[in-house]
Amino acid sequence: MKRRMFVASGLAPVALTACGGGEDTGQTVTAEAADRAQALRAKPTPTPPPTGTQGAALDALKRAAKFMNETVSYRGGYVWQYLPDFSTVWGEMEAKRTMCWIQPPGTPTAGHAFLDAYHATGDESYYHAAHRTAKALVEAQHDAGGWNYIHDFAGERSLRQWYHTIGANGWRLEEFQHYYGNATFDDAGTAVSSQFLLRMYLEKRDHRFKHAVQRAIQFVLAAQFKGGVADGGWPQRWPVNPNAISSMPLPNPQQLPAGAQQGMEDGDYTTMVTFNDDVAGENIKFLLMCVVGLGETRLIPSIHRAMECLRRLQQPGPQAGWGL
Image (cartoon, rainbow, N blue to C red; front, side):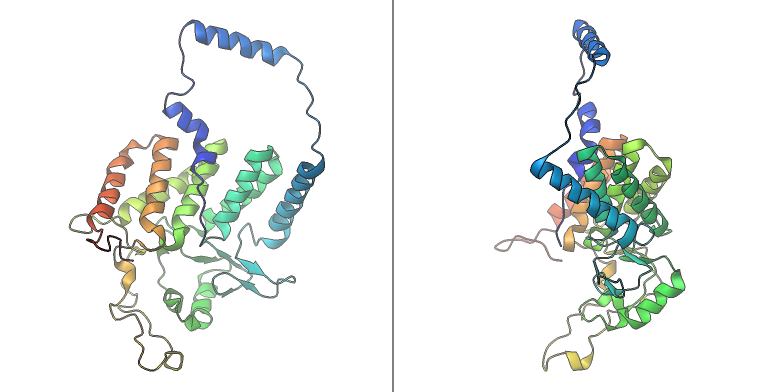
């Protein structure tokens, strides 16, 4: 799964202020203020419309974004792939048309792309598309503050039916074989959604997104292991559901080669410290973005604990890496 760095584009102005950028005193401030006032009084030079390759690229971008927002999306949400007539759609598995896939490259990935396009062009239509996608993510946010891989706008009954039919056949995709009813850090679904909503809040200070971000922060903090060798790490899924399975589903026997192990002998791994798919790294990134963008310095100890967990659980040489 490909990931991108979204910190710089969303937080550059805030980071500049936080680091002291642009701060001057005395005559320098007075001179700069006079220059700015003169520039505002001056008649702006018209910007010629883009031509050639740049114009063609902007036109293609506009048409693609309009198509994605108005035709492809379902209430602002996205899955991964679609047949031209939308008769069948897929995320990591076949999905319902009423679903959105949170796991990248799904809904939050599309939101980041729209917001990046808005930053690059200043065209409000891209912001409106990003805003619609952000509202879909707010609706999909789990009560605990994180996100599951998928959300079904048709309701929980429809989602459970998907797990009992399509999801139940997902060999290798063990978590789709059982409805946990909680949220996941896996594949950066919660982290990238949180990062996108933070960017949306910082863009125009829409408080509906700030509330969602604060809930996401609390989710990340509450899920972080406290004490012992696991201190500072995160599980794959949270909160622990007492009705969840105690061991991972076994593959269908007819699909398992003779003599092969099924790979789930250690039980339900979703409650264990997880490094797979950059769970810790993406959570640390989100918390750092909140420190810089919101001034949430209370998060720094949690960041330190997470980094110390990474150091502490590194395997010894000669293969000094990490387990999943």
